[in-house]
Image 1: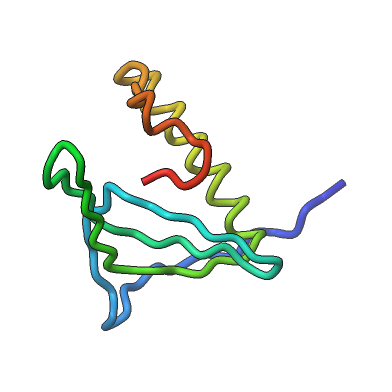
Image 2: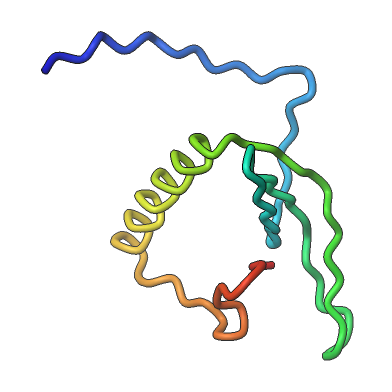
Length: 98
């Protein structure tokens, strides 16, 4: 089975492009799309964590799966190079991961 040649991809940043640091990602799923909401988490007191959301991005289910695959590959490569990434047991997925 032969595959058609892949096109060249030219990456550019639009005028709206911005970078930001997120240590919180909330994911909401519907039949049509995935909504990823990025924010910054700050521990205010032992009892209070504040999350300031700054950007939400909708992706199709197909793009969400492609993102999952590329993230998995990059996390595996990172751990091969730098060692296992440890997660706080309280942050293990059971719903939203902040």
